[in-house]
Length: 242
Image (cartoon, rainbow, N blue to C red; front, side, top):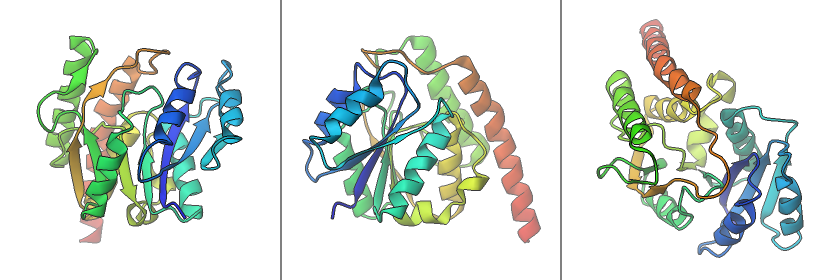
């Protein structure tokens, strides 16, 4: 049985979804896919359903609407853990993450990492097609997270990740507070404070060419304020334990 599962959340991804699915199914070693579909009005779910007839390893969870990125991934984590996958990946639908890098993330975990992170900033700034303002905001957001939390991670907001089963089994998903992109920071921080080994794998991030970005200013506000509160809570928790 395949023990590798890629979670791909979707909302209005009809331009990308078939191509990304077909690409992932060409990879070796093989990966299964679960699409977390948030009731896209553009017909994304119908495209996936048709492809399920062709690919037995393609699965889909359909939700009633946009419930947040974090809850989408948690739904995928729970689905994958219940079906005994040992390596569970987060990946975008829009080719901003190169599917070929799934293999490199998997290899990093096979070689000893508990969590492998596709990092845009570990070897400089490897971002293509983003406006300079957005690059700087993202880069300095990761610097800010690194300073506040103490994590030695250059790309704390990265959304291209491989989790080993033991990391996800150790996390109480009910205690994960963030639903937006700060979810990515919280998951890394939770794994790091639990003593797991995090490894950054350098990638080149290429902004989408098809479809519409889901980013907004509120995402960065959540991350900026949320990281500070997350660190404070962790300090109080540590103090109670002592």
